[in-house]
Image 1 (cartoon, rainbow over the protein chains, first blue to last red):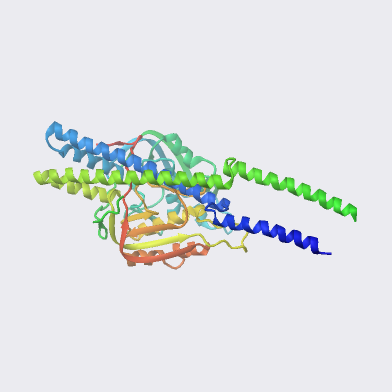
Image 2: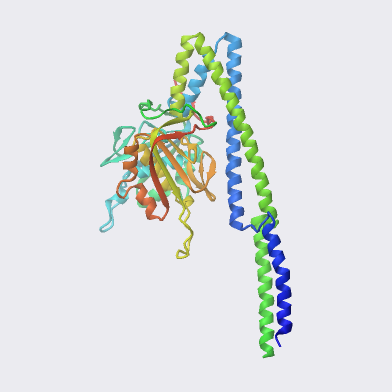
Length: 239
Length: 236
């Protein structure tokens, strides 16, 4: 009774088995979508790094040309080195800068509290200032200062010190005035846009105003730049 | 009895159509009309090409670097002024993050948890970029002198921000795992991030895997390139 079925199934098995073995032998196995996503992300990262390196090569070639020009003109590379020092100082925040940008004023809120509401809701905290500064940096700010202290990401710390905030080892109380140099419309939008951190602060009732300016000044970073723990790596890893 | 088979047959047809539709949508939207094999083959070959180009550029950079160093040292030998200027240059480069540095410090590794069927949603650190930002802030507050994330040096203008399905750092999209390296007093850095209710426990509370390791010799690469300012001009 079952014989025809059995024979048919065995026949099928016989066909499927070699196919399976062949597929396993083949280098191109089945690829899952998540694998493809990983490849796509890898590719995105590597191409962005490639762009960065191309830019680096361009800058270094320019540098060598500058040295050679300077040598040909004045017999030395003093001028070229001075130029490079100036450029690096500007990049790292060690010079005062001026240009168009925005002034953000942030202060404790004036509104009446609801019953049993936490007063912290309307006060300015270090994280509020930090987040605003981060939003401005993402929007392309080239230089930022808070209450006259230059903010350098990776160097400046904005710390809570009770009723005050410590920025670059100096203590400030409210109000906080953030100045940012960059495209003034982009920066204004970064604070005012729906979903931005500025919008969140306004909803809490914190006082927040943004003014654009065609010319504002940001001072240089004033703290010590002398490292204690780090030194130049002897054997650079090739990059 | 016969009617049942008819229904089952009909349902099978509908199921088949839906299945085919599903496959087509995936192919159109995710794979640009290619089969998974073709697509992955394409990606792999492109990746290989980009990596080769990168290697060529890295070689070129090493050559250019040695050439620059040659010019600088040969000129330094001739004049004391150039020598002191070069020392100045080095000092500013270290501060700006344009030189490889090493020293004692901390290595923090953050990774996504393995997929857990008990949770309906995916946990991906990419969407919690503010934790990475806080970590950098805490390291700074503990006196870190140089920080890098996945070998991207953090400079005065670096951004750490979710963009699409990655976190952009220096405009390079990065995925988990994130390796954060910091140079500074390793005891102070370790104590600061491991504070009770501190940043490490905040990250751990969200089920991410995080490992903190003190090290006597952390190496942090330099930032590749200088950002040109378009709006800001030097005062004085």
